[in-house]
Length: 140
Image (cartoon, rainbow, N blue to C red; front, top):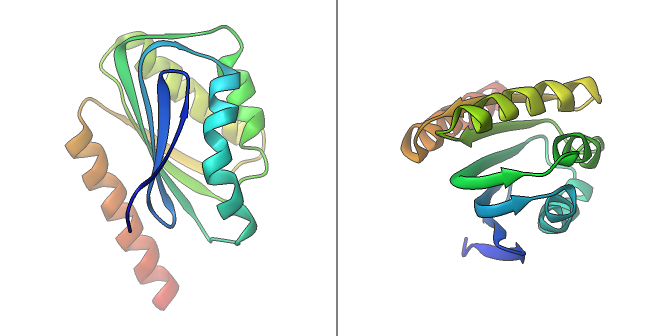
């Protein structure tokens, strides 16, 4: 599948597979509005009824997260299908923020599993393993 790309400010989302999206937050400030705009590429897929969504979220070291962005993000994904998300973050603030975001999204009722990594290769390998595991379970 040729990746589809959608941008919001300095940030973008790419659809690499029918159920796999890569969110890139390279630098600048990430707001709830940015996430809402980026989600527009993923949102139509929810209506198709996929059993699961996979996300890779890449956070740049010069990224700032605006107050309220985490809460707003959790609300935006309230109606999403179950999801597995791998976050790539090197800064302590980003790592703890993404762990907190995962807990918030689950508190809003979204079935989500997330894990933080310090490099993209490890995150992609983990997501691929999770996808294979889910595929095997659905075949059985």
